[in-house]
Image (tube, rainbow, N blue to C red; front, side, top):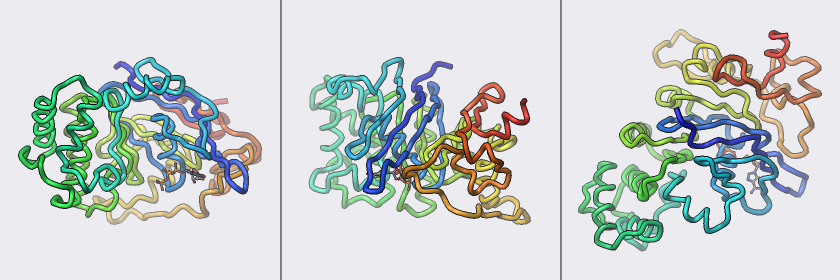
Length: 322
Ligand SMILES: Nc1ncnc2c1ncn2[C@@H]1O[C@H](COP(=O)(O)OP(=O)(O)OP(=O)(O)O)[C@@H](O)[C@H]1O
């Protein structure tokens, strides 16, 4: 399986009044061709910062301070502005958190998709209109509705338009950042099913950012779990479900209700996520970890491969494996 995206030791910090917020530190993972990777973790753990770092969208007071992001072998963090313009939309695109952010209320949805196509692809207006209609059909909207305005669509339909727009220039990798926020549960499920369907049909690579562990486990091939700016575990969905090793991953699984087993007790995670400002060298989960020992309070565990394709950052693994 070929690697489309490779994120290596990525660190992104924000300057704040109180000090440096280490929003993302030393994060490494990759996404294969045709793979759907779920990036999961509590609110504020750095998921959007990872996505924005990949897309080179971090602005002051934030800065990518270390690491590399290779997209099909090209380091995005070293790309020039014109190289980036060529890569965005055609190689990598985003389905945003809210379609409201993606769609301009004063233009028809078709005109917005057509504009994106004309800006990034070498086609004429007639071809762009035809492609727009096909894209709308692809996401389950009558192609003739390209002349409608965003307010003429429901929330779910607007999100479908945002998906069509993300696919406008045939990208290899799509990042979906909480794309169903604000939609009702049934519409959320439809939008997620649509993304999965398109991913399979177009052999797309997708990073699906979410808080929703059951949804992510049901559709993603691999899962990367973040805690307080660090990646703590990354493995196939099967491994995460059957052999999660990091105490945070285990706690997250135990804190998730199981609709097929009402007998299973849901156990919440005591304590709260630490502030990322001026955070000392340590395992960031140690204050909430029932197994923490001295080393966890003094050193940062390395993110290491404990089985083929299964990575964990926890001193318990090191202790157990000698
Ligand atoms: N503009 C900013 N200024 C200062 N700190 C920031 C800024 N943006 C993000 N951060 C820091 O980065 C951390 C991670 O934020 P991020 O939005 O990436 O988390 P997230 O996991 O995507 O959260 P959510 O699930 O709520 O979207 C925040 O807790 C905050 O400390």
